[in-house]
Length: 69
View: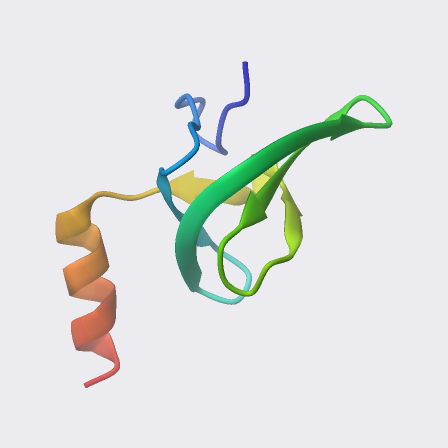
């Protein structure tokens, strides 16, 4: 089981926000390396530690996008 920073289950297709940069994307893959869970995001196509990510909802996504308008 792969969980986010708040302990919520992460699944392929979940919307995720990386708190350090505010990057928002969809999950496309998982891996375990060095006893850490990693999540690959669709954009920018990089791997992130699962415990540094936060699941967001479609409503949250709209809120984040309006912050940049």
